[in-house]
Image (cartoon, rainbow over all chains, first blue to last red; front, top):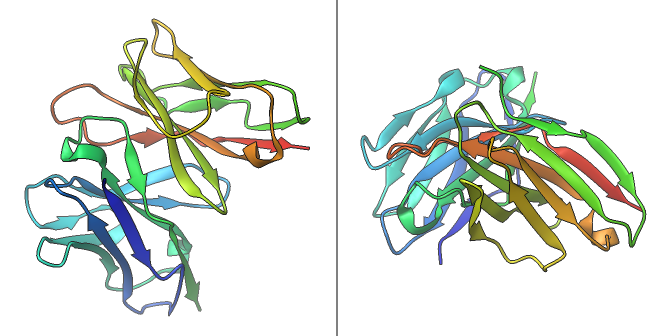
Length: 116
Length: 114
């Protein structure tokens, strides 16, 4: 069965600092991987996705992630944090690696705090 | 194009009651999935409907059920509510094409069971 582990339930950075949110996955087949962001009292918004094309994926709001098969990782980064980046971030994997099913398996989430 | 809409946004029910939540997907999207989000268990997949048929099901008791209509709108029902059913219920829709990887989420329905 596929699974996702997000290291660190809470990450705090200063405004302008590098953001690094860690995600490791477990999958016996090539996975499709996603990062979502959730602001308070809102649903999930897709930041970026990996679907077996380029291993370095660029998303919205300046975020990017790199798929590393050897490390089974898909860490999310942003060079310079803004106050508006404060939110909860979820890494997810699509079941069975098909990408065409509607079942996503989510990590436990990481709350990003940005200090002025 | 309008996003995924969910109604109601907030709901308070009593233990033992039943509840129905509604989800309208993005126009043209035929797949609708439901997720439960709680502080303790995180985001958990409930089920997915595609063309009015349940295509996937998570590990939830039979009290949780759903359906999808011909216009792709979906409802989920929880019978005999328990305190532990208090959660944010999220609906997501996607297209059915070969490259249909992205799911688009609605704002959720916040259910409180007292």
